[in-house]
Amino acid sequence: MTKVAVVTGSSSGIGLETSLLLARNQFKTYATMRNLNKSTQLQEIAVKEKIPLKIIPLDVNDEASVNYAFDTILKENETIDVLVNNAGYDVFGSLEELTIDEIKGQFETNFFGVVRTTKAVIPTMRKQGGGVIINVSSIGGKVGLVPFNTPYHASKFALEGFTESLRHELAEFGVRAILIEPGGVKTNFVDNIKTAKNHNPNDSPYAKTMQKIFEAMGPIMADATHPSEVAQVILSAVNSNAPDIRYAVGKDAESILKVRSELSDNELEKWVRESFMEKKGFVRTS
Ligand SMILES: NC(=O)c1ccc[n+]([C@@H]2O[C@H](COP(=O)([O-])OP(=O)(O)OC[C@H]3O[C@@H](n4cnc5c(N)ncnc54)[C@H](OP(=O)(O)O)[C@@H]3O)[C@@H](O)[C@H]2O)c1
Figure 1 (cartoon, helix red, strand yellow):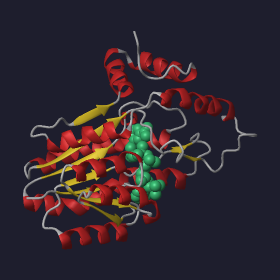
Figure 2 (spheres, protein in one colour):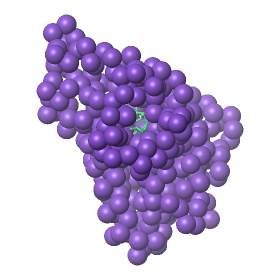
Figure 3 (cartoon, helix red, strand yellow):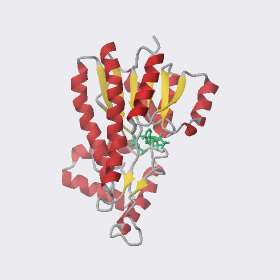
Figure 4 (tube, rainbow, N blue to C red):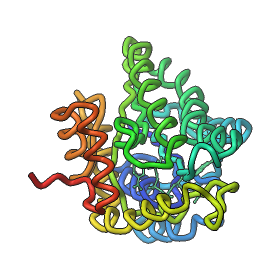
């Protein structure tokens, strides 16, 4: 029987590549996005390749939009076999200059967005006795790597704990939740970073250090992974009979996990800071 997959945030990057890969592998794929004006590229590829991909609107921040999307999918299908929770963004700034609303906004998308869509699929997956929920976290959900990124790290750490706990309660119904932890990925992610509205570079006590971090971002992202690699890992996890709980993706992510297991917390913190300040990146060569 044809399997049905749903992907959030399919307008670009990891979501776009994952939607295409799932459809190319004969999953009937609902590529969802909050702004259908961004669907042209994906639509053209799907038509050209004649793959089973349908684009529908879904804003993970909006309960009504989530309900409408899943109602539509369930009217057209008896099952939902795969949910890829991918939609996310990054808000950048010192905690002092970030507003509570900006921090809540980060959680609204990166955490509560996942909660909403996951709640929408659980009844179907539970009743059908199986399903896979892929949560695109980050290596930043394991280690607080990036300075001035407290909301992002907190949202991804939350997603990690949420997923680990959820796995226990869904296991008896054959439903699996799996974490994907990419390092740097070449997508629109950096261009889409929101900066704290109250940050004034001419007046902020954090301006000098923030500028250094921004400058380090370029060299660190230069070696970033292609989003199609993340999509491949997601497809393998979906198709596996015995998937891992989490998959780190990219040389940097693997290196960070290795360093994390070998160093003390204090040594790890020093390594992270030096990696940024000296623009060395996160792939340890020695
Ligand atoms: N790139 C990296 O280095 C990296 C590393 C680790 C983890 N990740 C994670 O990977 C995921 C995908 O990011 P990406 O790298 O592919 O970046 P991206 O190219 O910026 O894509 C992000 C996607 O999320 C969508 N989105 C944002 N808010 C949304 C909302 N409220 N409802 C629905 N969709 C929404 C965006 O839609 P619009 O086009 O409408 O904005 C876009 O489709 C994120 O969860 C991110 O945290 C990325």
